[in-house]
Length: 294
Ligand code: G1P
Image 1 (cartoon, rainbow, N blue to C red):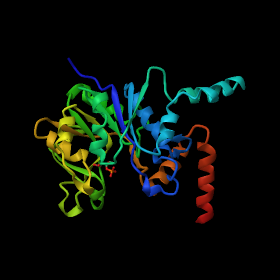
Image 2: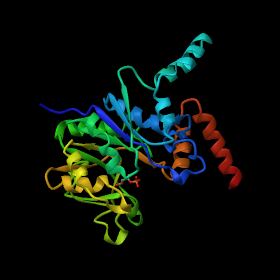
Image 3: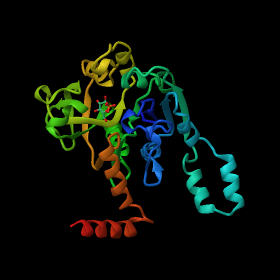
């Protein structure tokens, strides 16, 4: 019987040191793009892919993520009393009907592989998605994860979202080499974490979207510390390749690297230009601003 992807893991225990002081008391995943935290975009992408169980791997100082996906009784009652039905709906939609959220504390920040392993007991023996909220992807449609789930349903093997990056930037990503692409995907032959440009097997980078078969858990368990002294998911995937096919999928859509200040700023501008209430006024403002600087 074909297996279905019903669970998503969000590794969100990272320190967010690149965004200090903004992230001193606020998790980086709670920084907003226009009016929604990055974390919520990630959950919405999972929901749009048909996923119903959200597993957050959190750490110290991440309580506001738990609060955000909890029911806000007082606020809801207050808005109801004041007849603010539109805002009330937005609030209630944070966690749509039928979606459950599980929170697991990663007590030590030992790396992405370790964070994913923390979800093992909740995921069990099923395929699952991993979404890194820092990588925000806009495809003007159902979302990147929905595209990947569609491919998973057909192929039933692990899939990594990839995109070509500037060859000078390979040391920021997991990099794959694949066999020829058929359409939008290819079988991964080799994967390595953050190689320097001169030794990188290609410029095809893994972005923060994965669908993994549960065999990955045993692989992570046997993975020692890799790049940066951390237990790397990439190294466990390299081991998985010895036993199973793993596909690289070049998604439709644009990725914003919101883990970097420039990417975060660009995402805010472009999402502002897509926002149904703001887009016209914001576009006018930007045009005037550019004209005044010309
Ligand atoms: C992680 C992964 C890396 C991947 C990247 C995507 O790195 O280890 O393989 O390419 O996410 O954003 P990080 O950005 O957490 O250093």
